[in-house]
Length: 395
Image (cartoon, rainbow, N blue to C red; front, side, top):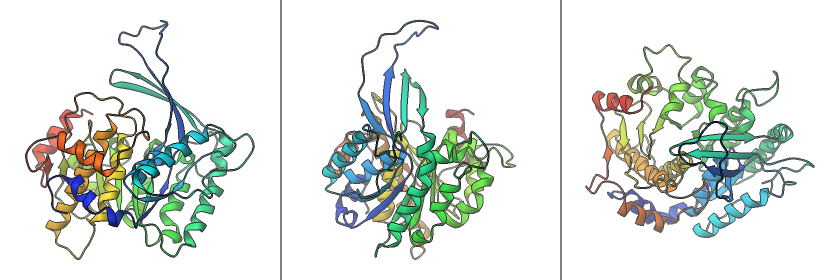
């Protein structure tokens, strides 16, 4: 896949994508957004146009993006069968599957039980800022443990296991209201990463707050032994490493810590990324696109994760049989395609609605980003480059 337009290379390999399955574990929620005008005043009353309820959550976003690109998905979601709002998420997945001529596993998709509620999120936007209010059903979070176990058993019965397990924000790993409850210190995420049913499956982890807030020490051994790629935003990764004895929280020191543990993708705003292959001291970058009008950045990081996962299934950047130079080149292209997916997500409302097929992504990439052949990819970054990113994203 040697093309300046990374999405063209992915589209050329759509026959490979059609034979893949990805297991997506993580969040699902109904999103209802409000956009506030500028100059909002305390105690003021605001009138705003109604916005539609949308599907969201890390693994709904991941699943919809993958399905629209033609990859079959096995979603493991906190979806309540008794909640009529869950139909909105099912409709979103079905529309994405139709767009990509792909399929997802319907059996064991929802959790049975009277009175269970699918998580509900209220998003309040004002300019470039937003606040997110999450409502969780404690009963659903408790039921998710058994739901996860059932799905892992189903995967264990498959003749061909999933190519990748994409682990997003597992809501049940959030901070506990009381001590001693299963899932509240990362146990459910760890169960996925260590599952014997997924021993031959690569693991791509896109942590949410419930996971990265537990700190790097909690995950250090698992990153080294069980995780192929970790993705975090630049602010998230700084929070993640705060319990480490780093000289500072500069990007250079963070990359040095990850070097012997796992491949790291650190997303940047609007919507690029810096990455480093495990064992490498050669960071690479896909510089952000200049998007004239950002409609909604919700789910852009999830879209990028889905893009990198798609690229790594087409041409592996962890293949030890090829040279380091080839691995770095493949990794740079994966970041480039992930950036295209994330940037496109910024042009649409919601994290899982209107997911693009490969033809749409090719058209978008042709009209976006730098005009030169390199398309804004850097295969080797200097310390000065890393310093400038630190200054651009002040701590």
